[in-house]
Amino acid sequence: MHYVYLIQHTLTYKKYVGRTNDLSRRLEEHNKGEQTSTRRKNGEWKIIYAEIFRSKADAVTREQKLKQNSRGRQELYKRIIYSELER
Image (spheres, rainbow, N blue to C red):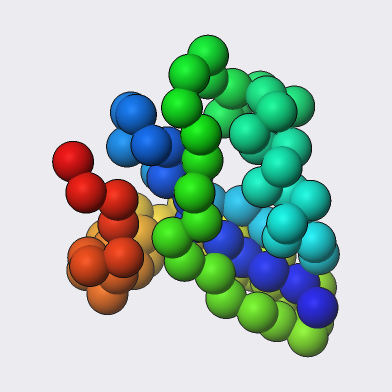
């Protein structure tokens, strides 16, 4: 299984879209600071949304659409408004 996920930081409330085949391992890597684009000194990343795909190609396509298409991200954010971390 392949996952496209959206995580949010508990202090900065920044969001990050990514793709993996092991969601728990990947979240652990983000929180340990092993990913340059999500490295923070304090706080942690929480999963707020995930999609599951059987095909890696489908997951790659979806991740690219979310990362490259701001309209796609906006539509996703509208659907998950109550799942985001509270400020």
